[in-house]
Image (cartoon, rainbow, N blue to C red; front, side, top):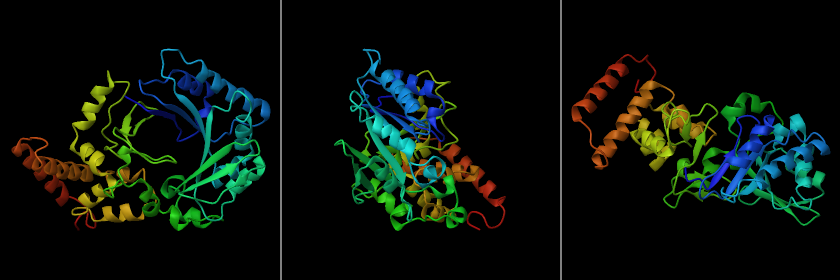
Length: 348
């Protein structure tokens, strides 16, 4: 795949299966691999003994990587925000951070990723638990300067409201969304020099990195997805694909994928708006940067229309060729489906 960074993430908690995490750290490889990152809430750090056992097992898996594999750095990213703190407090995260200050462990990277909310004192509580000094916010980042001379970065992202919860539930909590946490504001961090935010070609970590390649996800069922960069209903599968080149060829045979990789989901919303005006509302009102494509392409009619519009653009640009009769038949099919749509959807 040509990875520069390999991240083991959740959608849950990877360290529920610590042996798999150790195997991932020990074996994941790519010729230019620079960093291996494990995302965890640190829930496993129930006491000092368990913290030491689990963290040292991970570090040992990293240090004993076979000599022929890339000499990648290893980072533990701790997810800690108001929601985590309500369940497990800040002490598990503090235990991991303290442990990594011991001799022989200081070369292990560590930072905290939180969620930016008004009324949330979780980061202050973590700094107090560590006996550290907390800096002010700068570009969605704060730093905890520790007594032992280390500095721990805390990077804040925006809350995905229609993911972890919804607006009704959020309104009942003692925390709220500040303006900086709105998608349209937070997303400016990731814009290119041309003013576009294209997640498929952006690393959205503390330091934004615009990629020559793609930000890809391999899901637990084997599906390969480009971050906000392809129709989630049309994905290759690593269990059914011989090599990465074959997976890329499958993805790039789709006009919609090429359009998204070039332009991003906000442009897709504008493309859909002629036929599906609610697409602009989705793009404007949904406080999430990483699931907009799923919303825009949730229905077959939307996917067909978007694919045909993207194909027409690529045909006009001379990027592809297509049999005109086939394209016209596809448009006729879409028109027939449009006429069958219930009132109040699409152009109606």
